[in-house]
Length: 284
Ligand SMILES: Cc1ncc(C[n+]2csc(CCOP(=O)(O)OP(=O)(O)O)c2C)c(N)n1
Image 1 (cartoon, helix red, strand yellow):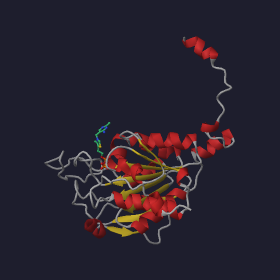
Image 2 (cartoon, protein in one colour):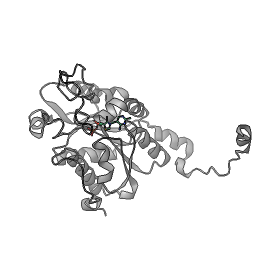
Image 3 (cartoon, protein in one colour):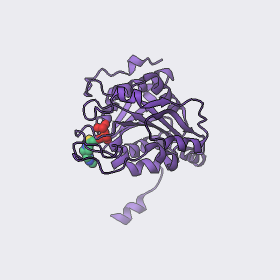
Image 4 (cartoon, helix red, strand yellow):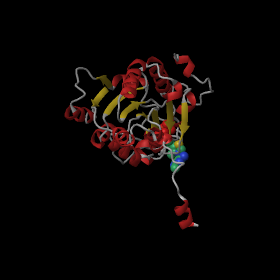
């Protein structure tokens, strides 16, 4: 049985001391250990950015993709071998900016992966430019007079695009985040967790103290109630709700492929007997 310590590759960690990403990777290790998953059955995928380093800091299989394409890579892995638990990690810039299209399409497909968005409201690795979730009129390195663009609402978008598990976590509450990660891993379908992640270097304003004051935990909310989940996602006031907003079991793209392939993952299909000499002839 894997222990949390076994999932620590003991690499030199390049994140800044105090970075919210430590909480996220620790919650992932804890969730995998508590669910007793075999690390060889887990693939952690990422894009580019500080969040992109996540696969390096957890001892499972891993893949650091290119900027904005992490979800597409995760999709390929999961479709070719559905037995794997695929966890995709993106930054807010990575997912809500450059990778937005892939994200929306995969929620629509209800692909069975867990997606953890490290939402620090800034492009951190490249030193603090405004990202799609940066608050309106915020001064950043790329918006010295204030950010004139309205921020995108990730949870509302996820709910409207068809994600079947939608949650908000906080990198500073390990226990709560671990429970969300466990629930997301066990969910069959697209599980999306937007994690409020303090960036102590490039956006110190949204600090641990800030989030303590500006968040609250959902209580007595029925996650099968999508209308209520949408209402909660639209709460953009002084305090943001944390927890599972929405959860539903519906037919996923995997059910469809299992139905037509009798549960044979694409990686195990026998393609060697197919005669392609006519095709080769045509193109040579
Ligand atoms: C196609 C492409 N465009 C731009 C970059 C430059 N770049 C590298 S990291 C980064 C910022 C990433 O920000 P975010 O996704 O929010 O992740 P964070 O660093 O905050 O975790 C950018 C713009 C790149 N590597 N590739």
